[in-house]
Length: 217
Ligand SMILES: Nc1nc2c(c(=O)[nH]1)N[C@H]1C(S)=C(S)[C@@H](COP(=O)(O)O)O[C@H]1N2
Ligand SMILES: [Mo]
Image 1 (tube, rainbow, N blue to C red):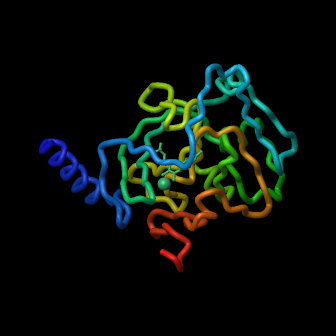
Image 2 (image 1 turned 90 degrees about the vertical axis):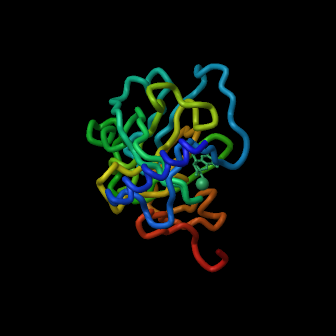
């Protein structure tokens, strides 16, 4: 217990000095689980699909097998949750949307300005197109070299993380990544998702502490 406390404090000092701790955040060594509603159960991924639609030249639907053929990357992210915990140096594997666009696997129409992540049970979250094309966003299928835990989004989740030591204007709070994601919709107009409609800030920039939409909180 004391060892955990000391370890947490030491890490907090370190990341603070390195300028990696956003205002109002503190370090956790655990990986808290946060979401609204049930965790989906997948007995098989045979019927799983991932759909890319909206303002694209061609709508595409990938099976799990096809998704596993897409260009993948391993990335290290600092995670910042709006509920004030941050978890540092987490290791993920997945697909960058920008890679798909650059390789012509997703053909965006010029009118596309926003991206809506569509998840199981109708959950959505929204960001600007630039945030989803940035290095901050990953369609992640592995954490710590293992498939995701059901509670953390198995088999695939959107993940919004910060690159360690590289402050970016596209650093977002963690809720901007939808767990159990099944599709991406590109739009001309923004469309607030589940937490955004519940009073969370629409942009969610971690350095500007954009936690809630103001007023009530
Ligand atoms: N499908 C879905 N994804 C979701 C949520 C949710 O309610 N449903 N909650 C978000 C919130 S509020 C947070 S903080 C992160 C938490 O991710 P974690 O449980 O892996 O820590 O998931 C995000 N993704
Ligand atoms: Mo959250």
